[in-house]
Picture 1 (cartoon, rainbow, N blue to C red):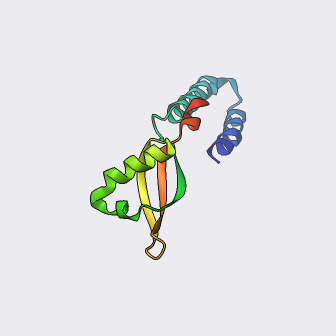
Picture 2 (picture 1 turned 45 degrees about the vertical axis):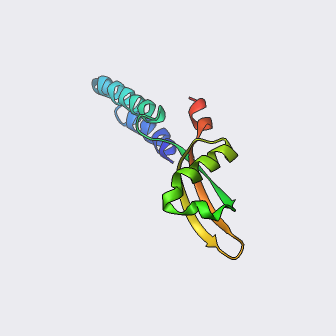
Picture 3 (picture 1 turned 90 degrees about the horizontal axis):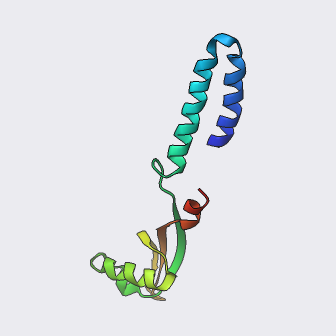
Length: 112
């Protein structure tokens, strides 16, 4: 949505100041917009994080004091560098827990 707004706002701004007196200001405004977008896209402003939902069967590892073991087990199983874990529904009858695993998305970084 941000890009859609920028794509529509920049031409309107440029056409509104189409006389010769404000061209330097328009060039500076356009360059500032491009620089701000570049800074934000290079993750100097935003950090992209993807997530996956996992049904986890080692319910004894969801306790807070065993968080490091849980993270190590999930990283070994998924091959992802996990940044955080959110524990959702816990089913003690089937000894499972629904986890939401957050990790840094490498695909998002590679297109830049």
